[in-house]
Image (cartoon, rainbow, N blue to C red):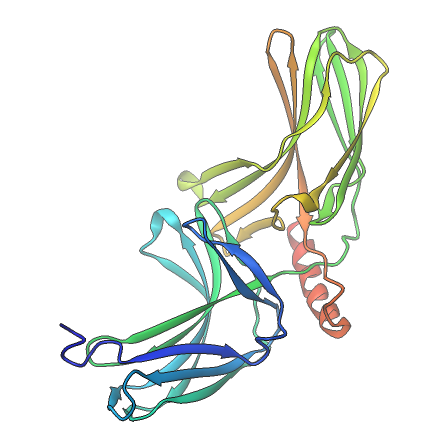
Length: 321
């Protein structure tokens, strides 16, 4: 009915980025398990291009109350879908109110856009960046959105001490775990060793896993969601006193994000190394240790841009570690 009255989508809108052909694209999983590719941006990158509006019937008048484009950064908590928390909002007017009688395009440019957080899609929360074009009309606006991916880069942490954990049961079991570092980039390798100091119970199985903990809300409304990223079998069989087992865990094999702490006071994402021992009576013993993950600058990024982004991200990293 709305379309018959002349208020429907009588035009199609598309957004074409200036460097669309050369800018890196990254795959993103959708809610319906589908996949799309989004253009990748970093903090401080310009976002520019053109908005193309094509009339479905050339010569037929399209009345509008103005056309604008917005660059938005938004956090959506899934159990609170009615509220979107915007932490970035930039807008530019493309056309004043009037009539459009032919297809046309409008250039736009947002310079050195601050993108302080990394894009993220989790179990209960999503942080997204996108461009939105709005053709304002009397009854039904024409709206088109284009999703953008943002990665936050860091430089190598100045302090990166080794990790040591102990699992003990008095007079029965004493095991020490040592890992080479506490902070790892997303393509890093976790190198460590397990030492059996005292073994008086029969252990039949041992495994190491990475646990991702997503925290949303605050206070009494805090909700934690744990996800096991992997399961790495360390040994199958009974160890003996004095034995040691080396560990090498390649992080690049898994879909990981950087550690995120108190993002806009809405959510956090943390990672833990989780050690599990199972004895012959199927009793399970656990030990967890938090690790920090960070995103290393790709070699393809221009050195001048890499330095600026890394410096800002290092300051952010140091402020939360």
